[in-house]
Length: 342
Image (cartoon, rainbow, N blue to C red):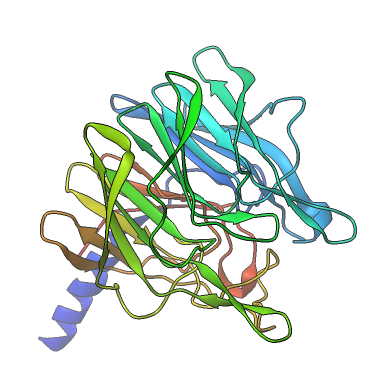
């Protein structure tokens, strides 16, 4: 009887993960991703990132589209740069590819300000705006199908606690209520309605000589004022585990009022997957979610271990993780498709 129960539990867990989406044309990690839904069908997009050898020369601005059950390479704007840690969001059929950072031959890193708009219905790019304060490794969320919130992130030499908001209708920027936790990069979060949850990432600790990049095991919930998008009421919430994860994939899910988090690493790292402590970082297989109605965390079956993500994609009951790093910091061309299974 024990063997039968164990077998049934393994079968249920195996149903949580499916692999029926084709692999990407090339392995890529730290890529910005977006999904455009069309009733029962959808398109997936991947922009920028890092190729398999994980050196500064492997940073690229390649873009890929999954459409009609096939991946194909698509163009990027002529004046776009090869960057890491950019973000992508969509409003209707338009995708906004935001920021990122470049790495010079001497290793110097520079946050870029450009925000490009891809009109997917016409397959046309344009430079739509520039961030007032360029950030990378930020969390980008869309509110009211109009406003893009950039929450904290890295600017050139340090984290910022800014919440920069782009009004896509008026083509203008304003600042919202500042991020209340220590400023971080590589954090993750999602939004449902006017409620958002942000967790973890890396904060900077200044020492007598130099500084350290350390995990920030903290989560906060924000509620955007319905009458003033510049006002956010922030409140800390219990942490999911006491362990901070870096570069998780995350998204908000309206049909169950949850903010879902997956993967990441408990050891912050440079873009090659080697920790700032010189220890190779390991990917996490954890999946958990904050239930906005219950005000509590829920924990789901594991997925294949994965890290180095910019966002989690969702369509219907399924979630998609595009590329990233898997075991031994290997850059992946896989698409992980899974359901939430308790």
